[in-house]
Image (cartoon, rainbow over all chains, first blue to last red; front, side, top):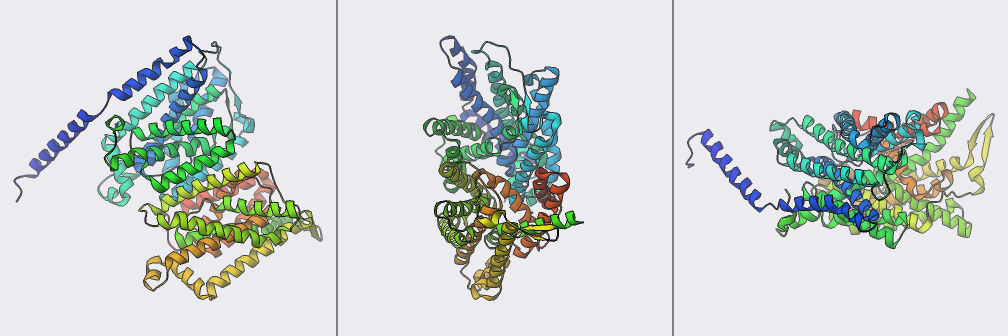
Length: 345
Length: 292
């Protein structure tokens, strides 16, 4: 028989046990690595004093943007298990919103990014209320339909420039510093994205999301407001995409439907990064983003053509899904081979 | 009035082609529960087979149709053996296969675009630009032929499913996989054959599409949403439903295109897909909300 007398004692004992587990996890967590990475990346642009590092800076900036988006996608696709291939819609909405403000009122997109994120998040909340009623393949297909609809709407909407899109002013910094505002903006966003994913994972909300991904009906009957939880997860991930889209528009100096509602680069890539790195892990999207951007650079440098790029992306995705459905981090963790430095959970 | 009749005819003429494009998708979903997002890129492959047959050797696309069917069926057998057979054990099978087929769609698109560039192509047999006039309405001959061939193929498939012994097994597997297996149907082999048939239909559709629409590898994204709308509206897995939905949506799209402009005519399919998924996920002829 149990040595506990009352329910309270059992609860207290379980709490104490969970506490020791959490403390053990905290002791082994390599917190200094992300911090060190952040410091190195923050100091990296100083290299501009000793030479021309515009291109490496662009690459890091690009990767950081994808870290932001992949971490956001992870909250919906990784934790909740709802695979969306339509998040480029929110990227475009963020880009257009901040782009219009910049073109009309001259307010920098970097300042407007959180607002653009909120707009995208709000739209995500509303769309989520509708589309999250269906599950599995239906949800994936509805997200694809969303992209198609959105693209035609943006092309038809003359107020935001139609198919030609918006032209945005170029900043007047000297060329070697011109990228830096965006670089730091994306650095902050990427750090924020990873931090949010971490906080969500370690909250009651994140626990609810993971329960939904395991078995939604059981989660519902366990008293989780599954509808609210998953719609909120959708909104948070849309928020990340909206922020990234806002700054990316000013960085590119234009916002155009065929680039911003691009299904491959802004819907599939973040999803692929998450899957490749490991869905539902914190470090996964970061690792995935670095790998995919590196692969892409490699293919562009060696093969040149953009069609090869699509082929390569598809192949990597197919092979990952077939042989490592848990992703890099997930597979390593399953076999207990995950280096402590990469365990950010 | 003549306008209305004309639009109706144009819509109906395209409906048959859409129906054939969607039929293979529906069959594969019915038997294997795979939402094959790579289907449109395989149709594209069939279109290229017909295109090169016409361009290099001057062979009529309708004559190339069986060739495209055989090539695509072989691709189907290969894909099934290499990929989907082993995925059958996966716990998140339906989601997994959607992502996998999406990945393969990109692989095929990339391969086609690498080999043949993203130039717009179309085969131009004489009848593709011809039309017959009845009073003051006209019927484009290419679309008429394509529609007839489509209906013949779909009819043949329906008869095969209805009256052959193997078709009986396919229908049994569609209705209840476990029960069919218990009664001695080799569901794995049924899956293989229906996957091959589905892809052969994609090849046939490709050969017909090659002179009905102009095409280029990345156009399959648009087709994905169009075909999904047909299959979802018709009820996933119901071939009859797909055909009916193809005619309905094609006619509606023709009217929308006439009254609101050509770009909005494709929007019809996307909006229909979105709305049907959310309002009636089982579609017109689906029996239960399998996917919801």
